[in-house]
Image 1 (cartoon, rainbow, N blue to C red):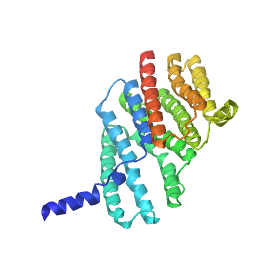
Image 2: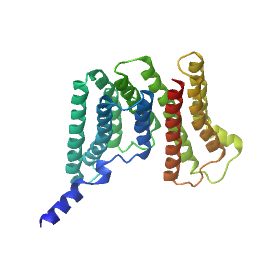
Image 3: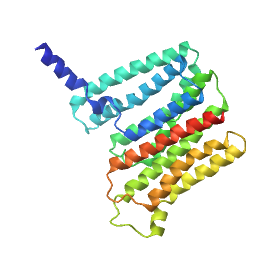
Image 4: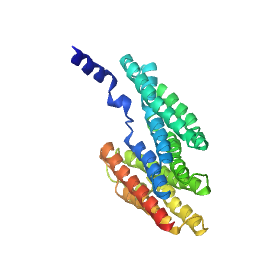
Length: 283
């Protein structure tokens, strides 16, 4: 009887779609900046460990909270309310412990970086309650900007103080994230094409991601030439731009969304690794 009771509790509380974020693409927009912050600051310290724990707790907290909103709006069965509250409690407790750890290390100045997440979170939850959260690139772009704050937070925790480089890291990573999101939406829209259109039509459909990815190279290059950081960093932006050009010429007609997502995940991961190594090599 006890074994059956334990098994029943596991089935109730340990449901993956409630406990773990299901948007695979969003992972790279958090883990990538964390990696960059670690590499640029040249190592992992206990201070950075508290910051990373807080960031992960906040990232995971959104998933059960979203499920709870879906339950309250009638989109999910009421039986998921209790496990959602359970995981909110778990992640909330972990986040509180992480924040206390940050405060004990004199990192309270980094806690304020969580504030921009609140309006974006409320916006997302409002859309969820109205069944309108899907295919909203502007929300995803705002969310990637919030997640990207993990880069300066981890970097500043590593060096022990604020500086301009942290904000540069955030801005540079967000530029790539914007291009990545717009490109992913281009690929998803191409799925519905019945045949390969003329070149002019393909380029017209891709003009926004091409402009953003190409403009990122130009903008980052100008900043580098102005002495803000090494020109080597600009090379990392060629990865997403080359992918956008390839995707514009080779439409994803009939390609499954999961394959589109996995390819873009690999491209974004390659960018993050290249960016971190190039910045570190130039430093």
